[in-house]
Image 1 (cartoon, rainbow over the protein chains, first blue to last red):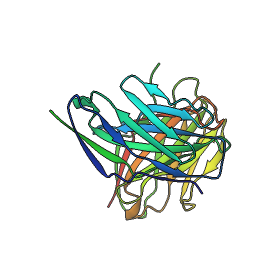
Image 2: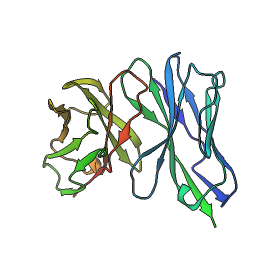
Image 3: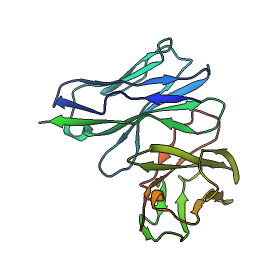
Amino acid sequence: AQTVTQSQPEMSVQEAETVTLSCTYDTSESDYYLFWYKQPPSRQMILVIRQEAYKQQNATENRFSVNFQKAAKSFSLKISDSQLGDAAMYFCAYSSGAAGNKLTFGGGTRVLVKP
Amino acid sequence: KAGVTQTPRYLIKTRGQQVTLSCSPISGHRSVSWYQQTPGQGLQFLFEYFSETQRNKGNFPGRFSGRQFSNSRSEMNVSTLELGDSALYLCASSLASLGGETQYFGPGTRLLVL
């Protein structure tokens, strides 16, 4: 079974600074996808970024970028120029390419943004 | 396009009762997945429905069941409620069930079992 681990329960960042969230996963599959989701206090899960395992190029989405290290099974998220609105829980998630839309989530990292 | 909607948003039940939660996906989306979120267990996959068929099932007891209608709307049912069923239940929709699809989440239904 696949597992996703987020080792940082909480991270704090100064507004306008950069923060990096760690995620490692365990799988024996070669076809899979990785995601970062944001869950603000409203509890609505919002997709931040998506990465296909077969793509070597790291995904980016505005101020959000990932460092995908396939051999190390690592998928970290970098938030640049942090804004107050970035404060939320961030979840790393894994989806097999062959098992429909089942997402396996990590435990989450709470990001606090200091003004 | 309207997003994923879930009803009701809040629910209070007592042990032993049953509950039905509803999820309406984004228009055109045919896959609906359900997740349970609790402080202790985190986010756990319940099941996925695609074209009215259960595509995937998580590791939950048979008290948890679901179905999908021809218009892609989905319901999940929990029978014989236990205190541990108190959770935020999230529904997510996607276009297809091909693996790796981006899932769009609804606001959730918060269930409290007393």
